[in-house]
Length: 398
Image (cartoon, rainbow, N blue to C red; front, top):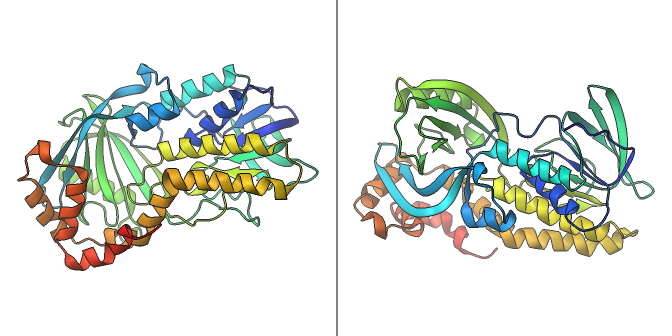
């Protein structure tokens, strides 16, 4: 999509990932005749999309009521947790999630936005953003035709971590606790197609975890994320190659892709002077699981709903309560949980392999139908009183 960009808009959304697409679609569906621009440096459906592509079913359906069957590669019926010594723990949660084709989901959401009148230009890179002046911000951009500028009354930044938009202003920057992640599309493996697999322990991915998420019966997404404190001693790409060679000898690797995930929770403002942040640009990723699709979509939707209120307000003092409402909605949906997890994340990252092994051996004896996520977490913590004491912050306050 290469719509000609106008010189002036009511809203400009930078970034067409999950946050930006939901923001643009929310603005377009508002029933108002606003002019909305959605720009990204590349087509958001271009493969590969750097993501494991598993989401909670009910939460996705709450955000996108009409989930199209073609987006869904298959259901998630549970998870298999693998300890460092190879002991497996199977959690049954039938039809609890979707394995999605994220690239196709992006394409359909972009098409819907375009159909509602959003000006989409997906080969345009935003390179600069001015402060609010005379009721407008100026977005500077570059594309194949050269450079240009557009003005917008409100900007929603969904451009990802550390892009620098809003630097020097009282707003989060999305570059807190950035961790390396890498994945490969792998063929020639045998796995239960409706289960995600997660591998814990330093021999897999220090400070993080490794995963196998099926794409279909022939191709799986195999990847890992490494804690920031361990990234130098265990480079992510090297660690993934080692993991695949050791765990799936003889597997055929089709491609490697990598990225950076902002996994912290700086608890900073999400909006100022009609600039809103959402998705990775606002550190909305779950600090421990590193999940971010639904978090980003939620943030994009909330940001757009707040922006629809402030676009008609000339004074910043009148806009601030709306900014606060956006932050409160985000905190109630995800932020408060992220804040608690961040307090104890380091202790989780330092769980010894022996604790995982003992917990897995104990849990593997429990009948599958009687095993829940709460029991898995409690049993793991119970293996180490010292760890349980360190993690007491998980159960106290916000």
